[in-house]
Image (cartoon, rainbow, N blue to C red; front, top):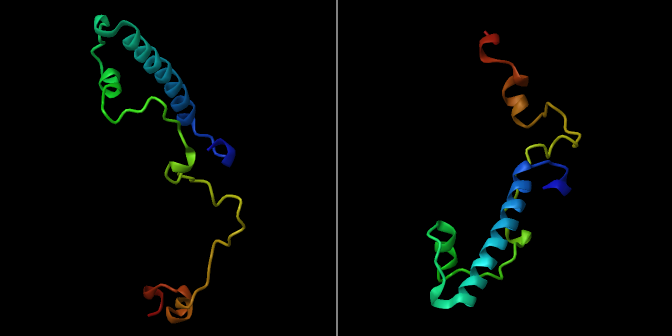
Length: 102
């Protein structure tokens, strides 16, 4: 988002959160491997996610797999006229309101 010229503060927080979660997940996986059965399992949602059968600790964020980003200011730098004349302009009498026609 930042390279598109749009500042999105959520991206900054997302990167910080992912950084800390990766550290915590790798630490827990190492401790579980090191201590085996004597390892005390933390009772929280992160541990539930780690123990999920679909969890892959080697996953990387690939931006090409993400959905389209919301770009609310994408039209600011384009030179677009405010009024456009279409084929309906003549049919509806040049944009005049119906109450002004009587």
